[in-house]
Image: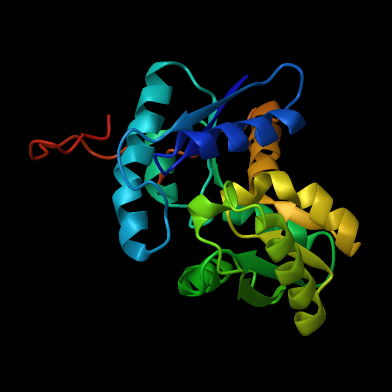
Length: 241
């Protein structure tokens, strides 16, 4: 079983962290590979960034299909290009926001999301609506650490831990969802310090893909997720097939 964990931004160091976290939960018969987008922004912190990241995600999925990959994780909390990737891929494609919220909903009656910059709060709120998580999500909070600083700022983990603590107290939540793939390696320590479940979407999504594949399930090709119709594209735009 082969699972690609796609980092929609172009920062290799973040891909390395994401892939390492995903591999820790994969089964013995699962090969997990981190894939860095070939085109797009170095980090995703706006609607503009997200829009420009989608072609890179789709290019990675197309390459994976040619190489026989079984399933994919989209490792950005905005879940960029999720629906389009499901049209292209034969196997399951799971976004980390979707997986993290679903997992957290099983662990308590309400969770808080702690993300990077405040400007991304609206996008997280939109995703709670899309995934039917409004009744579980009690609040969305920002730690105000830029994505690329998560790996370089020596105080990042401390700041994020305190943001999680404040979120739990303010929202009376039972769990925390970390709202960035770059936080993937922090959940264990934060959970131990705060005494509540802290969910990382990278591991949650990896196990979701693995579970679906183990059950022999693939993305339905009836209806909206059918392979896109063949048509001409302008130069520089890749066709779906």
